[in-house]
Amino acid sequence: MKVLGIWDEDNVYLGINDGGIEDDLKTIGKVVYQIRVFQPELIITTNPEDSFIRFEKDVNWVNHRDHRNCAKVTVDAAYPYSRDLLFFPEQLKKAGVKPHICSQFLLTDYYDHPDLVYIKVTNYIEKRVQVHASHASQYSYQDVQSSADFFTRIEGATERFERFRYVVGD
Image (tube, rainbow, N blue to C red; front, top):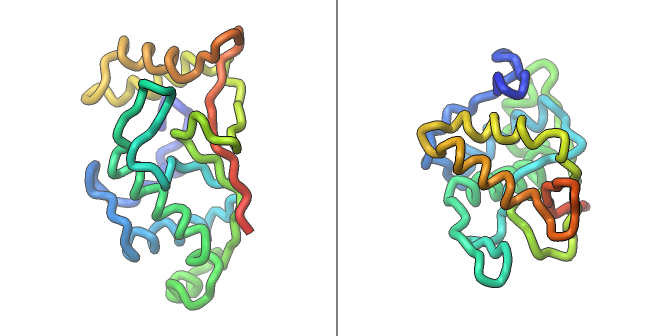
């Protein structure tokens, strides 16, 4: 978060350890609270649907369990839980916490979906690499650079792009 310039007081940590994200009401409640406080117009999360991610014909991988569960929890928290007064009513007794509806989503880890949007990131590649490299226990700097090159380059384009599935729910 520091690499991105996010102050410690603005960094929300839900107290869930790596490998421990569960798709349950306790976790949904934590995310509902944040949605009700922040009132987002757009939510960005990972692919909630696929256990296996397909990048191209012969390039596939397992969608990390934490990523799948985080996405499912986030989508459920956005609707109906953050909207409906009957869900987590104790949250609504706190100052600044109110029901909220967010119906726009950008979802990562979709590469061949008809709802794809491409966001130009050419000017942010080095920052992307720095942020990803912060996970030094999991990746080498070379791995991170290779990942950025792999995911943001599109054949025939000189600019670099991140791909998202854009969804508007009702």
